[in-house]
Image (cartoon, rainbow, N blue to C red; front, side, top):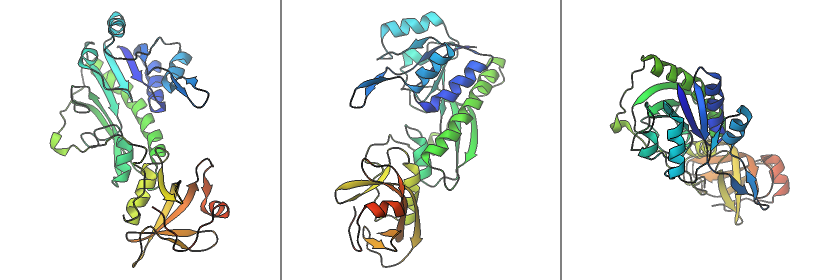
Length: 307
């Protein structure tokens, strides 16, 4: 099949590589425009652009997916299908253009966790499994009929970062297989049950703020869910302290948000049902460090408050 691939971040790179190596033809790659980052406002290519250039594939980087010149370029390629991984919401004039429409690889077991951050919210809500769903793109986001779905376990120590790595390679395996079946006429797409749908809203910078009135188990899930991005954190002396690893212990009569020194190398923060125990922390402008190293450079005391 002739396809145009659409994606932007690291998550979308393995699938592009796999499709390029498959029996299908990647005619072109669509990715987001270059952005200027940092103090020097240096122009940065997207990860998908870097891979496309490495593979020698034509690139399109439209500011708007409704741009007339972009739509004409798509029509000129006359693709059989669009394959989308971690890209923008496609307007109907784009996803309805090819013969087979457009398919998306979504990092959840749809209809659960429809939205921009399915990996994070699956961990936060304590799911034991997740997966990849390949579905036809429709007018409503993440609602199209399901063409393929595979499940993987969420390990107890998985963060959003480690789980993303597993899922992006699963998507890379599934997409060529799904296109093979579609081309051969052996694929049966199944409708989603909207009654089972749950949301996975976009993460904001303050989504990872830890509410110390919550239980310790939920706080530890939050740390895993929001690591590496946007980061789980608490405020201490008006500074945001990120936590990338943590444990907890059950305890009664705690005062949420209160520090308790356990030794020179460890401390606890009282939470809703016990002790929240940071194991790896990062102060603003500093690297991540083990709690004992962090305590060497940061003075804290019993009964000190965090928020």
